[in-house]
Image (cartoon, rainbow, N blue to C red; front, side, top):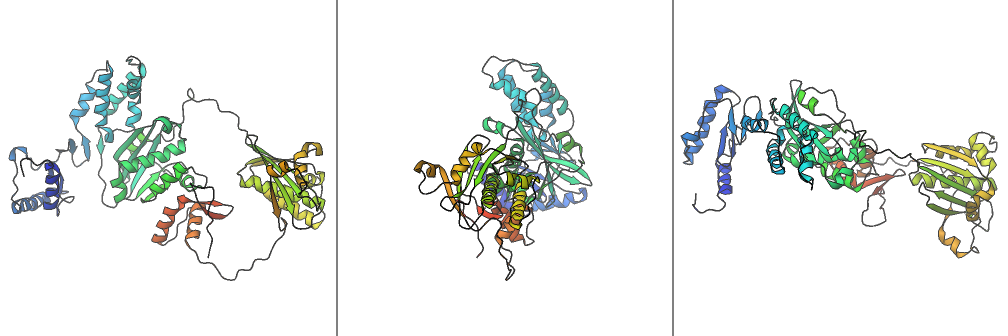
Length: 524
């Protein structure tokens, strides 16, 4: 090679890749000028060497005998020990840490963490093990080696004293990913299974910072998958991977209420062949030692949770007046915000029917706003009595209204229905009497809607022809049930598109992040 070539390393690497193209990855591994000839069986090793020597003779390449070793079962390659058992860490690197005395200053702690960084792929939950050391380096005050640090240091030495062996995956086999989440770190281990026993391939660990510390345990779990994929992308590109976890990640990443962060992660992961399954029984010591999944904060660090108060309040009133709107709805959120709705009926209603229509409209509004618990307050003794079962609904339309109200109340996790005095329902009463002659400030704070037809009106539906399944059906099925079409192309497309869509009231909408409009997906 040219003597003054600045990119000699890259040039030599390209030359090796071109010359040994036929054997790289099969019987030979090379990194710049560090080369290893490997054989699965000892009786084929001589033939493999003969093939390599023939290539070297063809291109006039020479070896330095002083740097070559032949016929070994254990050898050093790229600072790791490679053998039939797998990939092992260099014993000298372990012994250096075991022989270390407890650090006396920040520089010695930095030296310790630097040595641990070289062993990261062999260390289960390395970030969690080294967390006390990181906290020392972050302190602005003077150096202080605490009992917690000494305990972590002793545990680290004890862990390093046991053999650290990693396995190599076979082409095309399915790999398994276990996840570990703690308050300040995330970890994972990639596993392969052979003869019913699981072997570790690679350990990944990361210390959480700033905003990541405030993620929920579920978000930290998904972040652990994303971080592992970014770190070990070559494994995920070459192998199908099953994520084994007890967390309902499939439902979370398909949920229409997921945060934009979760949607971004779901889109990123959709390009890989990743499946999420419940975690079965562990079949190996490596994953058994690793799994500490979704560890919650300790009782000493946990803040007392405030009592939940997610109850919404709904006030409704209605009248059969023809010159006014006819229905009034006031919906109060748990935070105290109020939404005012005035309903104008385009069909004839009795006084009791108008009160039912206002109630049904208010319940639909609360359900659309994702209310889970609701207090319903109405000044109609008849409506409250019929729904609660105190009064019997004899007339046909009243029965229909009562059943419709009961069905809507089933949507909520909890509800209460209370009759109040008319004086306590003044806001809803004013909205039900809103007209063109009402003061302007009242019409500005209330949204006026025209209802047509009535809530109990049913129209016959006749199916003329069966609609064929298309991409809308594929996405809706995947969001609701997790099912994918049998066709691989359609399944891949549905999995890729799903994070950008959401389902509201049984209809598919495309998420919009730059405007307030949400486009509806329709069939043509």
